Image 1 (cartoon, rainbow, N blue to C red):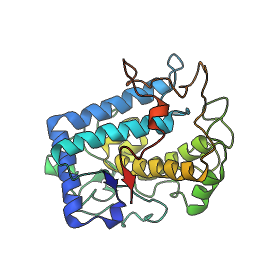
Image 2 (spheres, rainbow, N blue to C red; image 1 turned 180 degrees about the vertical axis):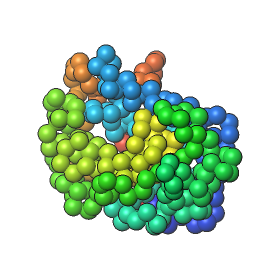
Image 3 (cartoon, one colour; image 1 turned 135 degrees about the horizontal axis):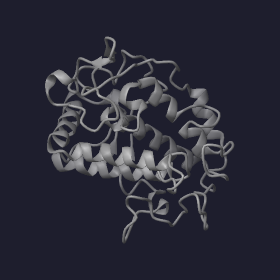
Length: 276
């Protein structure tokens, strides 16, 4: 069974294994395929000509669960011991705390361009050129501690207290729903605010260029799993024919071909991994 651990509790060997697997996926070109997928999905989700699948919509959580599973499977083709660690940004909230250490993700950006200069993903190593981009910076950038603070436990508690998964109009305006609060559009600015706090590429459609993306979304996924345990009678919604959202048994793009992945298939994470 795959076990996802808090990055603060990883051993030196576990950190090294995760970093090395990520770097190898980058070297093979596989990593950038994941960045491209996210960029494409994000841009389409902002285009009214497409049905939203990954952002500002009920399938935000199952879409990213499948996305993390697909990435984790690729990591494990490099090293079968590797899983995606999670970053509990409620506890580890300082720009100098874990995971911002030279043996894991490196620190914040420096200079006028906020370039990351230390750690395995620094441009100077030659191992982490930013090739899938929407600006002209070929290096990883971070503005840790930007305009807004990281969410606090009281913000998480607000999401956990929500009793309905989602509701019309099935977008960023869905009031007092768990998905929309956790995504960061209503009430406590959770997921979205973390992207902004990290800054740099994390604040762009190409956010997976920063490997902290996976640690951040693993924690978001864990919070969903925790909420499901607290509210077992609250199902994924919508579950019928909804023209502007992905229904329970409707396949999610880009996994919408024959035998595609539906939100229903993503509701139980335990066949794929557990959290420690």
